[in-house]
Image (tube, rainbow, N blue to C red; front, side):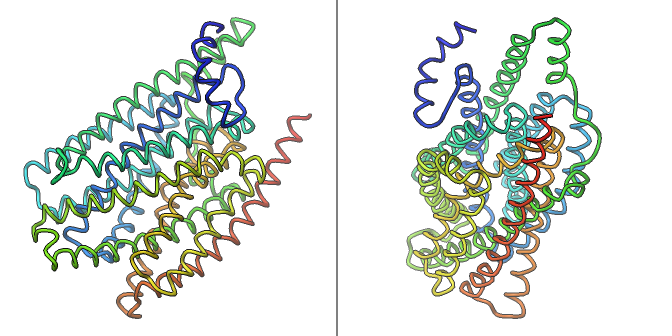
Amino acid sequence: MRNEEKSTSFVYKILRLFTVIHPGEALTVFLLSLNVFLIIGAYSILKPVKKGLILTKYEASQEAYLYAAVAILLVFIVKIFSFLSSKVPRNILIISVTSFFISNLVLFYILGILNTPLSILGVIFWVWVSIFGVFVIAQFWGFSNDIYTEQAGKRLFPIIMFGQNLGAYLGAKATKKLVQPEGPLSVYQLMLLAGAILIISIILTILIHKREIKKIKHKMATRAAEKEAAEEIEEKPLQKGGGFRLVLKSHYLIFVAFMILALNYVNTTGEFIRSAVWKQTANEARVTGKIEATEEADAQYYTKIESGFHETVNLLGMLIQLFLVSRIFKWFGVRGAVLFLPFIALGGYFLIGLGASFAVVRWAKILENSTDYSLMNATRGALFLITSREAKYKAKAAIDTFFVRSGDVLVALTVFIGTTYLAFNNENFARVNVVAAVIWIILSFLMIREHKKLSEKKQNNQLR
């Protein structure tokens, strides 16, 4: 272990500038940060492609309806995941799920070069990326929660989140530079690039898993205890029981689930408003001759404008993660950190409700999304540090997939009613979000109360 500490002394010295880090922790937290950097980097390449393909053929309101399809699919996917996690060790589960998504990207590339109609391929790819985005990220944070204790997670998660934000920033920036017509790659070649990045993330997962087993073996005094600890991590699957059942059995997890549902409702309604503004901007560019009137030119234009938006979002998110998140955790704790984003969203949509210009919508969403991707993502991961091992995988997967997308279904219903019967414009939808943000804040306070109870109960049990 001494040689390992010497080999990571440079990383240790760098990381300790940003948070409290103990000797022996540097390499694991660095590898986890690199892993999530790659996962989110791949996702940030796929997100602009997703938006580019769907807006080429459909309106923003039609895009919103797809969220309902995603939520329905996730009901079945979460059940399959819960079943597999009860049968398969965590490292095999993560590798298998990620490999499945990589194979899908190869298939999408083949369909793209075979000129599959965008009216079909765009919809399928949009739904797939929406599932990929919540599922693989939830899986990673379940893995991280399983490695760290609550106290260690509070110290180290901000560093891991910086890796996530850096991956998001560079992924969006790379997409903006690489996509045609100025760049060398088509939207379909970007899919293969994302798949190659995910292969490297699988290798890192294997290295991290083996390192954790080695660390526990080193710490154990007896051969019997060593064997038992290794089997606990390497071979023992999770106990039986579905993720939904775990959520419904816990008041704390119920409030976490509905708080995140409200969060996603507000964010997705904002994404609908943003897509509508993007569509208007593209129509104006087409009329003035800035872009050609072809599907390929439309897809490239949307991909480029979307990647530019995410580049700014992720740069700001990275700065928040680097300089603010660990301090917010230190000063306000996990419970206090939960309240920052809903109040930011409340103010942003209040301004949009007064006038949904391109600049107002763009910067309100930049501030909201950058806080979501940095502070709120780290906070959401930390909320599960006080839960059981089963909850960290199964309940978190259920919440980060089904409950997140249930918020999307409510958005689809809101958009349908608003556009079909109420003649809502963007400002009206922003005012709906103001009300939703208030509900989100109330749910956050209820969750904070349960978190405090659970934390105190856990501390009392440890003292006995």
